[in-house]
Image (cartoon, rainbow, N blue to C red):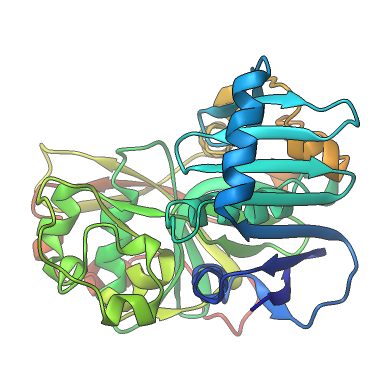
Length: 372
């Protein structure tokens, strides 16, 4: 049976047709509540997911006959993902995603993902396409910015944890969520609305590192290592045997919240931005305010994709007719550094043995009902 729905993020609406009800349910659970789900409106962009051995095999043969070239497809924080692809005589663009086992077919404003039936990794390819289309409308020109940050809500305000990989963002986020006063907003990407000083979470795959899993044992309780590929009904019937303990533990953002028994809130006014750093010489935690110049420099270095510098236009940008400019106007940064506290957050070796309420109470924020 065919499932059709419109996914909306901000001003961007994407109509999605899926021929497999399990895939449709999985996408809905992965993207909501960060994306709203509405009745089909036949407006805007259109994505279709087709599970077919015949279609997949025909494209595999066509790929073998063609001369595939690397095509830029997805912009991640420090990596531009290329897939081998080619252009048909009628202008149709085709790209083979070897990692997730699917093909992307682009024609006009239509995007089709073709996979083998029951091939669950292709679900990630579908999600990436929908999310990429939404994120391409985010830019400083629209007073919005994509920040590489985790985030939670405390006292009605979004607390952003910004910084590089291995800075301790996910572990600190899990610690904050162990308090009954917080809600999950994001794990890796946050859209910052500079005009409204609002934070919007972006659903991402949560790759849980071994130290985080050990510190919060509830994360892995009764879940397969690749839980991210399953919807709730499939999880209930999953066979947990035979999993390699060394497999990477990967969850959806909603599963991450559920395992920590945390509430979810997709957006909130920004209360503070913390830049966590692991400090093994410190036993506990330390919060230090940053002066405006250092705060501005750290904020700029946390913009999602800034390490890529100038980059090639992706195949999806050609569909949406958008152009990426990683340069952030000074006015944007000045507004944030003036209105929002930005702090260095040092994380000592014993910080996760303490209650998170100790450092949460030290955050310099006002109640969410009061203006900053």
